[in-house]
Length: 174
Image (cartoon, one colour):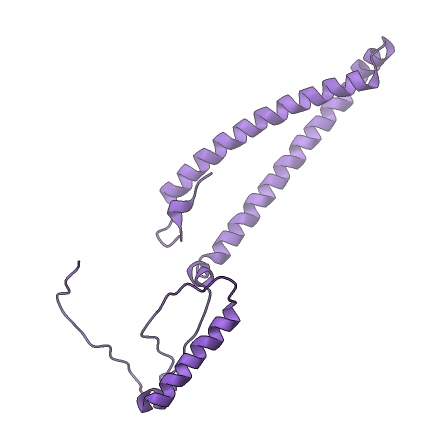
């Protein structure tokens, strides 16, 4: 257990030009299952009203409690950065998929003569389709393995370069 070296009282500056919405306590609680945030806010406001009615000092400072989602509180500072990063990654992935699709179409259009010869010597459409499908599955499997390897390396790099205020950094994994 930690033993404090010094005790200081909480001093709030209620000068005329300062707003009186100072926060001196942060309480974290878990809501019961099937309880909405609005219902919890109403219950907390009833508690604040009870405190205001029983303690005159609480009434004079207009005591209120604010209820908010812990998830929103934790990620609100990094949400724009995460959204921008997610958008950039999605855009790069879209460009990569379009490039691969374009390369496959060019490859197939270059194989028109080969496919025509195969059909002329008796190859059925199903056999030709099966061959093209097998080639595509091999390419997809290789791309998937390469993607997993890059994701693993990317996560390691992210954890090495991550800012200190990134929430739930220990939960980042594949």
